[in-house]
Length: 385
Length: 91
Image 1 (tube, rainbow over the protein chains, first blue to last red):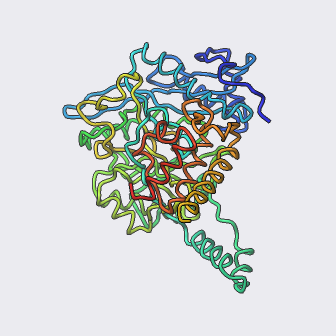
Image 2: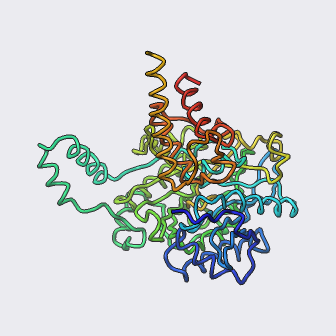
Image 3: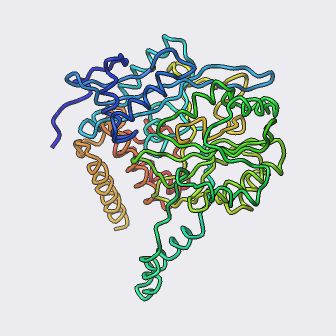
């Protein structure tokens, strides 16, 4: 039975420092079950963000309690020829406490947010991690999509065998053998944290020249990105300051594959979520750069050897053809979807802050923001990675 | 006779759609055909998602919702039924 409470019974406000614990509590529905960990995540994402001096978070309050929120953290895009840079806002962390859903709070929070952000001089907001639920609700409030991130996934043979057996068991009650095998097969599980020295050594024996490290080499990585140059497509500025901040995410575990000691020839970053609310068995390739096709292939080979019991996902939407071909040859496949099921992977969503810009062409540095061909995307730019 | 069958099918589809919306905890008067679902904010994120899955099941194919103005085309039960009809006709 509904209580008759409507959106007009709520107050919509901008975050103040004394709301922090309430935000951490509210985000036990989304970030993690631990309030302490949520505070650490908040401090990292909003408190130490290199591009914004203060958190831009908008809350729905009821009887003095935060019951809904949307946050905006800073990002820095570069693109065009000659390249231009701008600080943008990434809309994230949409959550409404279960007992306050379906009361029209999301449009009200967003209206309050857009009014304030327009006054602060921001032009566009972005979201690269919208799942199907946020995607539809965003489309209904003026956001538009540049397309899907097109995740490609590699599955270890054991996980593939298990899903075939699952299908057989579902299709026929006579396949008792398959059922037996399925019951006895160990659950596919793999954590980057569990990789022992011996395992790493064995995996990397076949790919000499590559090192596996737990800490990023932020300066070297940024130097390589700068040395490789830009195609002019829109991408996040990846300098040492960005990497130093980005890899401190307390809800993720990162591991790094490097080619070259003194002068970096390439790197590949593996990521795994650590929150109990996320899929902790999946490993993502969140960033990957190389000075040659051979180094790129060797880094991927090393990643597959290391994470061999985990599913590995990489966004393929804006990768060059030769890289998607390399992924296909290495056993990665695009995730398929059937009608009536959630689409795989997040979509790229954009919206101007000002309502009167909705009918204009949305541009950055002369590039159409809604044209996927103008983007050079990495999972690292989103909070999926 | 054909007209009657078509009317019954539409009624059946309407009832299924209303059940999907109500399952999303939306309390609305289904007798009022122009009850606003989206602009009023009654149909929240999860409800929209359920409606999207329902539409795809009914038309039997994947739909790229990014190409539509959802706020306008799904705002009432009748709008959603018209949207399904449009997709079935290949739009």
